Amino acid sequence: MEDHRPAFNVNYFVLVMGSLVAARLLRQRSGSAIINVGSVLSDCAIVYQGAYSSTTYAIRAFTNVLRMALERDGVPVAVALIKPGGMHTPCPEHARRYVDQAPRVPPVIYDPRLVADAIQTV
Image (cartoon, rainbow, N blue to C red; front, side, top):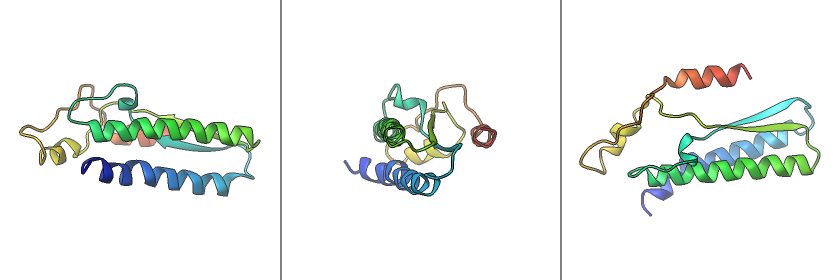
């Protein structure tokens, strides 16, 4: 449980709050989009990344529910979820504090700027 609470606070609850604020501000702007960033781990969890994987499942579910709620209410805001694979970040080094060996990110490992650039071109 001690691993899950901080992971959900940072990964899930911040995304939920930001998405709800964006939805409120964009309600009257046709052609707007909310793009949430999750992870491919929302489709397949990995050992030693249970807390993080759990947050990505929650992000996927929340994004789907937000999309359905906005569609139901006739709000012209698209809601998308981007699920990148392995990114070159310091996460494995941080995880090293909890296990004997730092988890490895399965290949291919991407530069996070690729995801940022893809979002900007949408």
